[in-house]
Image (cartoon, rainbow, N blue to C red; front, side, top):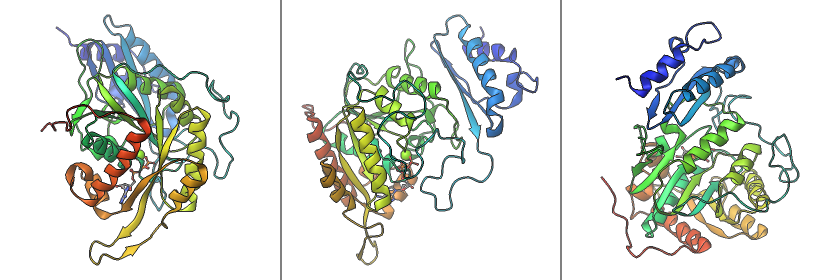
Length: 396
Ligand SMILES: Nc1ncnc2c1ncn2[C@@H]1O[C@H](COP(=O)(O)OP(=O)(O)OP(=O)(O)O)[C@@H](O)[C@H]1O
Ligand SMILES: [Mg+2]
């Protein structure tokens, strides 16, 4: 009996790529994840050819949807970076210039007032937020205006620290353009479909975690069109078996453009944690982030100063490489809580790169303590009670 995957491939064979070849023969298809009526895969093409491939993506989605028994299909068109791009001191190495991220506000452009671009979400505060997710107590976003300030690092360690406080925590990597969770948690496996039509999140450190990065190839910069972003995000929020959670921590993509604003509106957020480094430039972006959440009536739980003081692991000397205390002052100025500082520490970066966040790998160390102090303030802000069992058992 042919598997669903075979059926999908057979359908795709009838679709012609722009050069006339059958789609499966073009080498652009990712692994096809198919089961329980759900199908996910991506088509990766050269960034310059994205426009000519959009109709192929749409045809592929339609064709797969026509297979009897298929209830949900996600076909992502992703773009390979056209050479160069990234690195060279840029705060955020992704995306390819002018390609992979959606419109961001121009530097220095006043933001947070009035609509810009298109889309239905530009006007003023929303009267009612999106519906919550059954079983999930509070959803919080970890965000920043600026890229590379350590959102993902803070998100995963904050989640672990909240777990250490006795809360049942999940993590959603909503950075559709450059997912970090696969790397931060060294996850290579693919999520399985749960009974019915839902996806099972992957379990790590006693937490369910989900990322679009689990569904597409690592290192593939992605171009997402607006509706695709929303459908991917909605699926990851609402069609994943999160189970019963006190808190779902959402790692947001950087920026305060339309895409982030839309996401902030689509996710039923209880609050936002803004991450900033201490220097002025990052703080300007943090301010934009705060303005964005205020605009959509999401309470700002506070600011975390990341990459704060550097303490030399050899001699113990303190140096304030990016300055120190800027975020605390900014929090006071803006009237939002200051949640705490995370030092600039080699261990944090090394452990992150190795897929072992410090709170899990060095739970007694000073960095874990810093994250736990932040987690306590976040919990106060949310007023989430711990469950009776004080510790979650960590699965192997
Ligand atoms: N406190 C810290 N000390 C040392 N290195 C850190 C610290 N916080 C983050 N880093 C490192 O800085 C880099 C960027 O961090 P991270 O990926 O968390 O940032 P981000 O804001 O999520 O980036 P992006 O905007 O690309 O999503 C990573 O290599 C991470 O290990
Ligand atoms: Mg990130």
